[in-house]
Amino acid sequence: MNKKLYSLILAVLTLTGFMSSCSSKEDIVFDHERQQFETRADRILLEYIAPFGTTTGDEIYITGAFNDWDTSGDPQWLLTKGPTSDIKWGIYLDPTTFIPGTSLGDGFRFYSKAQGQEVTLTGEYAIHNDDPSIGTFTNIWGQRWEAYYWEGGEAPEPEHDGFCIYVDDQTGWDALALYAWGDGEIFGGWPGASVKGTWKHEGVTWKYFDFGEANTGLTEHLIFNNGGNGVQLADFDFTINRNVYVKITPEGVEEISTDEPVPPTTDGFAVYIDDQTGWDAISLYMWGDVNNLNGDWPGMQVSGTWDYKGVTWKYFEMGEANTGLAEHLIFNNNGQGTQLNDFDFTIDRNVFLRVTPDGVEELDIPFPSGGGSKIPHDGYVLYVLNESSQTDLALYAWGDTEAFGTWPGMPATGTETIKGVEYIYFDLGEANTGLDLHLIPNNNGGGVQWEGDDLEFVIDHDIYIRVADGDKTSYEVLNVK
Image (cartoon, rainbow, N blue to C red; front, side, top):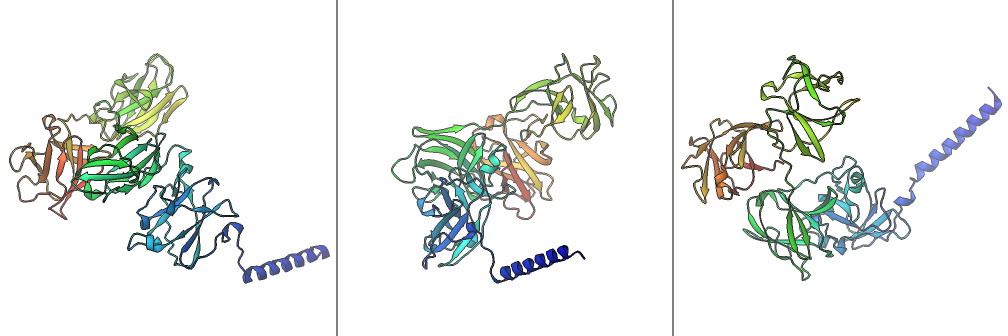
């Protein structure tokens, strides 16, 4: 063996042994893991290693089950930046200030006033479950801020306990609380609940309050105030039957419409195209399970147009009778010599396409819920997801009037599939809009009825419920969007 090579191998082995010996005696501690604050015998010390993108001027708070996930900016939950570190923040916590019966082990995360709440790499809210005792020091590793996802569009919508109210807060107040009175003080005594969280959506950072699933159907007077510090707005009256968006200013509360655009009524599903071909006319020819579907070459003409998401879409109605067919779509300039390559499509959904001289691209654009159905409705609708063994359903109503006749009420109007789910539905009648009713679905007077705890509805929106065999005394209200 070459002597130089042999000497080099010995040197490497010696160095490796030396490093192994050192590391076995003492673990390596990086600078950002070193303790920044003194341990206190009467407090829990958490030191937070903040996510990438945190700036030294950020305000970072801790929020969790112990403080009802408070993100109001309460100074007692504010972290302090480490004296010798720009990526580490610390906080002393006194368990006697926690909500009785809770601990850090019940879950917590951190919140940046500028960048939103802490989320995981998959975009879900982060949860830490460390539960250190008084007199200890614990490092907590941060994951991501919501702002990390905002760069590519917006943060994912939070999960809610029942319906919620989203608030575009333009008051300039240092704190925001929401008090409710009416059917009940659902947020407790004055000044009410603190902000539950934030969500960046369509360019606005919305603060939100969850109403609570148990409070669905209650009618409340909502009073926004500056955390009980002497300023409040006039009552905003609201029946808890949907998510609601409001803008608040020092002058008052304004509800903001967030209704989805109403799509055209079509015969079955439709193919919507953003036509960027520049052709004088465009036609659609189809072949596959059925050749010449909807017309011989050059195929069918445009059925109509619809303005949605900033685009005037041309659309072709596929026909209800053709649902489920697998077809090859050929867009052409109405038989004048130019056509694009086949686009393969099974007629089982509404689809959005961008069509250019170079080809066809499917776009990932959500279709408005419940839209595109060819089924006309008389007023608002009660949709029933029937998971029971009962097949003959009726609907009785009482309240302002017996709107659907005496017991057992009216039979189901029909069935409708929405987002791939089949519902039995009852048309509530345009003439009944605005009535305050108690709705009782039943098996057409056969001895089974579903009532539940929260029966009352003001007929001013579509309603989705689930009925099942497990509990024939109640139904579940579904938050279908």
